[in-house]
Length: 414
Image (tube, rainbow, N blue to C red; front, side):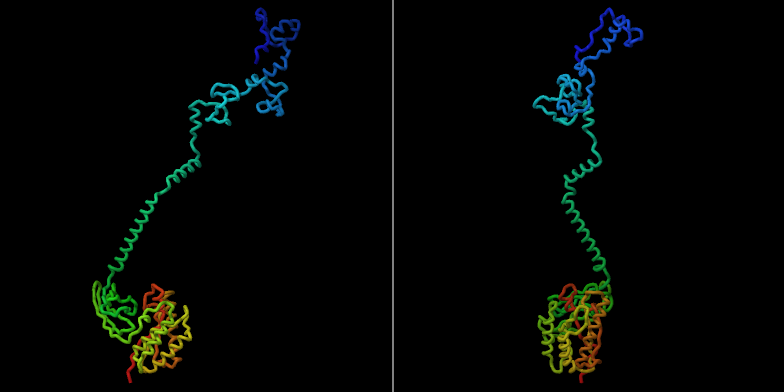
C-alpha cells in the first residue's frame, strides 16, 4: 500500500481526547471531536486507492489476457509493479521477486513445471531419496539379474558332464552286478564254419567270428544243448554240462555238404525273389532219390511271403510247395517232417505264437493238397522264441519270419 493513501495523523494536542470509534447517541454535537478519531468516517477512499488495499478478488472474466491467468480481472488494471506485490511470486532460490528468470539461465534441478521453492538441504535430501515401491524394487532386481546373464554357460556344461559320468558309472555297475557277476558258466565254441549261427537250447545266441570261434557267456548251470547251423555244413549237436563259474571249450564237428551260393545266405529284407531263386536252384541240384538233409536245406532257403498278421498262402508260394512235394514223395514214406512257424519280435508274444501256428498249419494243408500224406507232416508254432538271426535290424527280422523244415522222425530206407 502506498504511504500517500494513509489518512493524516491527528494533531498531538487532540490525542488525549480520543474516544472509541463508536458513535454514541447524543454525541452529534461533538462532531469535531468524532472526526478526530474516526478519520472522517464514513468517507471511503477513492476507487483507485481501493484496488491497492483490498484483496484482489473479483468475479472470473477470462477475456482480459493480462490478468486472466493469475487472478480474476477487474475494471481497474493494477500497475505491473503493484500487481506483482499482491501475488505469491516469490522465488526463494536467489532472492529475486517476479516470474521472469535471468536471461540464459535454466533451473536444471527443479524445471519450469515445479513450484519455485528451494527446500532446506535436509528436507530436500529426504524427498529426493524416497525408497522404491515393491514393484519398482522387483523390476530393479530383474534388470540386475538380466545384466548378470544368469548362470554361466560353463556351469551348465560342467553339470551335464558330471551327470553323464555318474550315469555311465551306474550303468557299468548294473552290468557288472547282473551280468559279469551273475551265476552261470562260459563256453567257447571253436572250429565252427564261418558265418554259422549258434543256438543254445533252440534260441539264437549269435554268429561265429571269421576265425570260426564263438564265445557264449553266462550260460545257466546244468546241461545245455548247442546247435551249429550252416547251409553248406552239417554239424553234430553238442551237449555240455557246466556249473557256476566254469569256463569250458568245445570244438565243432561239421561236414561240408553241397555248396550254396553266398548270396543265398544273407538275403536282404523284402528280397523274396532272391530267396525263391536260391531255393529252386538247390532243388535242381538234388539227386534222385534226394538226400533228405539236402532237400530240407533247399526248402529252408525259401521265405514265404505272408502279409503282416496273416497266414494266407500266395499263388507263387503254393507253386513252390507243389514243386517241393514232388521231391518229398521220393523219400521214405515213414519219415516225419516238422513244419515249424516262426515270427520276428514285433508284437506281443502271445499274438506271435498264435500267428506262427496258423502259418505252419496253412503250409501243411498246402503240402497235403499237393499229394503229401498227412502222416508225414507235423506242425509246431515257435512264435519269436527261436530267431534265426538278430531282431535288431530289418534284414534279421526278414529272415526270422519263416517256415522252417526239420526231421521229426528219420524214415528207414527201403
